[in-house]
Structures are given as structure tokens and as C-alpha cells.
Length: 355
Image (cartoon, rainbow, N blue to C red; front, top):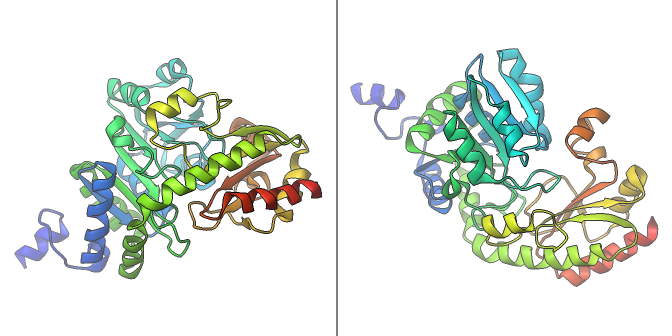
């Protein structure tokens, strides 16, 4: 009885109930913590389960958050629509303006939140500088590293206090698991498990999905370089098309944050954002005209995925919110998979002819 009580309180490690831990969880958590360079990790039933569990653990009523103006749509919705119900205020801003970030810090600012590469605008967060600002103000820096995976960027090594992932994406890599993970100090992860996951969200990953995630991670070091090599070929092709106003990819010389990318990233990633000159209708027509690219909202799969944020993932945002997030009506987001890049390029040539 005493042993059970200690385990339910989080004072002693051991298995008592699968929602609070099991051998499959432990195997995944240990591997991801090692990959990210963290002391510990906690798996969750989805990326949003991990994000929500981390945020509800880190924050309390009356706290203030500074967040990147461009974020995954559901993360933005959580902060913008749900936080106010619990007297938590989130200010969204351009985190590349470090002086503005310093000026926006308040006595009750407890968190700076960003993505290593912003969804879907491709803006790169200067993690060491944001960590410095957080430390100066007794705040945390939490980084969503989904776009990169630890094969490309390891935010904890750059000064972040915690990392979150949608493990559905590159960590799994096969599009057949929904999962999330939080990585950080042992003290914070214990709180995430006992507060964020156990008491607040209950977002528990199944043991079988943990097994599938472990399977996917065995090939992470093989998949990511191939994704990135193909993405560079695709981005260079897109940059030469007359229908395209802009291509955002960290590996291109035209990318405004190329030097920061070289400092923080071991590869340039497999995500591309492009701006079509024809706007909203051109964006919809283009994605609907591709054959080899799969029209889907995820990323990091073996298959190449394409989507139009304005009509899909961010369709709930107002025109003003889209503009503030830097998401135009003609923006297309692509996740380059493991197919031959020449096949992907030929498919896009035909789609361009359709618009």
C-alpha cells in the first residue's frame, strides 16, 4: 500500500496503471530523450496532447505568454481561444524582432513559445537568443521541433527548456500513428506526467502505438537526409517557375534566414512553402491538380504531402488573423517524401499547366 501511494504521488518510479506508464512508454521516452539531449521525456496520444500537457503544466491563472505569430493552427487556437477562459494571456508577435520580444516581457511572463521552423511560413526561431531573453526574465522557452526532428535541430542544446513534438510526423515517419512527446528536465517531465497528462488532459498513448513509434524511429537517421536532399531539388525547381512569386526553403540562397539556418540546422529540412501569384483560386487548383502528391494536412510521411493552409488547416482564421500570421491566400505548403524527386517535379509541371 505504501509503495502504491508513493507511485501515485510520483515519489517513486514503477508501473501501477498503464495511463501512468508502461514498458513501451519507457522505451520510447528513453530513446527520444537521448535523441533530443534531454533528461527525460513523456509520450502523449497526439502532438496536441503533448503541447497542451506541457503548456498546462508550465502555466497558471494570471500568467502571460509570448508566442510566435505563425503557429500550428490548433496551437494558435488553444492560446487564442482557450487560454482566456483560464485568465492566461497570450500575445502573438514576430519573434525575429528580438528587441520587441524583450520589450514585451512582463513581470508575469512565464513562457516564450515558438516552433523551430514556423508552421507554415518557414520562419526560423533564433533559439539561443530567445532562450537568453527567457532566462533573463525567469521564464521558460518551449520549442515545437516537429518540422525539424532531432536529426536537424536539437533545441535543448541551444538553450530551450523543453521541446514538444507531434511524433506523428518525422519521428514515426509512416503516417500510421498519432502521437506526441514532451522532452525536458526530469523535474519538468515528472510534472508533465503527474499534472498535464494524468490530471488535466489524460492524453495517453496506447502501448501498441508506442511500439509502432519505436519501429519508425529505427529509420529516422536514414529517412531524414533523403527527405532533405529531395526537398532541395524540388525547391530549386519551384524557384524557377514563372507562376511562383516566392519559395521559402532554408536551403535556398534566397532564403532570408539562410545564415541562421546554417547555424542551427544540420540539414535544411523537407518542408517547403511557396507563394503562387494567382492567389486563393490558384492555390486550390494547383493542389487539386497534382497526382503523385497526396492532398493531406500532415507532414513527415514517406509519401509527399501538399496542402493549402488558407482553405484547409487555417480556414477557421479570419482574414485579419491570417494576415497577422503571415499566411497569404496563395500559400502552398509541401512535405517532401521519399519518392524520386524527378517524379515529384514532373507531377508539379502538369499541375502548373492546369492553373
